[in-house]
Image (tube, rainbow, N blue to C red; front, side):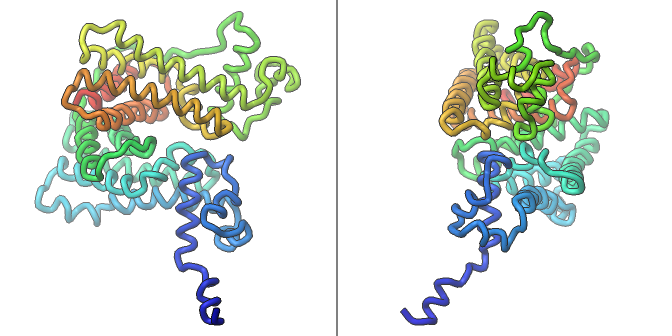
Length: 400
């Protein structure tokens, strides 16, 4: 081979940095920040670890770039300078809302495999990076809230914020699964669902005093350890918590924890199976206490909302930490997750017979994500009024 040919073969592609960012974003999205190593990302791109470090000095710096890439895209796509020409012929707040939501949908579709990264892994950002992410997301949120309050001046600031969060969550839900629809079908269905949310009439009545859970009196030590581990995983992330932390919360030594759970992974697995069992029960409860398919969907929305708010920390760990399980155990749990979604989607199709199998799954994921995302903004404080309002928005997504 000629010297020129050899040089050409060895020349690095101009888009190497972009390749690394895409591979890293997909790996972090699939498995989480901590379980993914630099060598894993480098192997996907086809380079060595040291070669990757020429582009990014640390794994954290690479992580920051992957998270900000998506949020920067959302901010750019919803910039008034971009949106204004879209609404110039159809003036008014509804046209602006549709344009902003449409931009969020298009950007999320373009980044579907990695777009959920900021939702789950953004908590690992620190200092100014975390504040940058918050400002960016707040900017996108306000671009929905402002025209919504013009369109519905009766809404309080808190109500408008809740509905805006819910509508953005509906769109973001497409990053949480791989069900297949064309881009046009996704755009139309998510815009319709977001509109349904933004038009929701929120209940104003109900008890506003939050109910709080604690370790049940007379709970076994195993149950107490599970309770504290869930809370600590929720507050600090799985990788930031050690068995000594869990033991201390339960007033025992780390070595004593091994009497109940062989490892920290066993604690996590027990927590995730508990979440799965409770989620499975929502379908049985909806069927048992309902007289019609539509009534069953409404009951499901109520039961799921109550579960998420009653067990907010557990549900958060369930969604955020499954990537930290060993591959075989993660696969088992994913299978149960899909089974639950299939059951809920079947329930929805009975209430809406003209809805396809795939579309019903999109709507189920949108509804589930909405409850969790809105719940996080209010710290899962279980007042009757708040839960009724979230349930109403979930029902709006499912039944239109």
